[in-house]
Length: 131
Image (cartoon, rainbow, N blue to C red; front, side, top):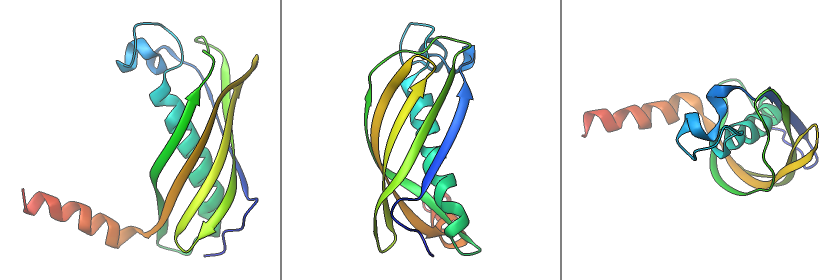
């Protein structure tokens, strides 16, 4: 693992009807939903560090603090820019700014943990045996 402070990432999307608060059940309006914004932010973060991980490793989101400051209509392009701000063992911290063509729509801080994919999935799937 060779993740460095300052590594950057980006994820982009064009708002669709399926991504609206109304469609996602997070509100009644046809605007870009907070759940989809969270997913966009996570995408920018995990994709920025994945090339620095060893074969068989991945990362999982464990924490996010988000301010969703402006709405985006269907058809507008949105994007999230992430930057690694700290690496503490397997914990990676990011700051993220999300925007649309009109300006900033959100700020976030996000934490991810580097995991061994097989071990993580095995532990997760073991829950099915213990239900």
